[in-house]
Image (cartoon, rainbow, N blue to C red; front, top):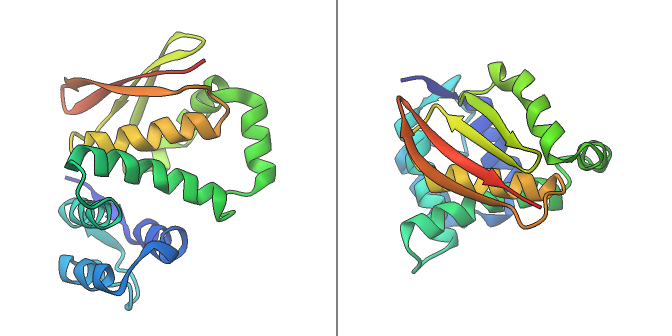
Length: 176
């Protein structure tokens, strides 16, 4: 099992999600192995990452089913990247100009830098199958993908889990 880069976890929690983190959640994250008051280690075990995602989703969306919490949290990350101007408007304008189809295909060039490997199969101009080499928290991944497609200009995006495929999860992504 691969690990999650410490800089990625630190960037997410200290930059993207900082306004959303309560003192109680910060304590829970530290107890789970993500101590935001200390420098990030080189990497985190995936189990620590999954627990941090779960705790944050539970805190942000209490009283909702776990799958709903995870999907909403995935979407919230993408929305926060945009709203908090971590993704600069120039890049976003160019990505929207390209549209979801071209942007997703181009993103494949950068998956070698990601701790999660993606495979994209184009089924039509507005429909892709996306394989993700991680079978944990599929609703979190679906929320990330759905919000990313929307951010890239896809209208009415929908991402559904088709199921496991080998060591990966297979998603179907559509938009107008």
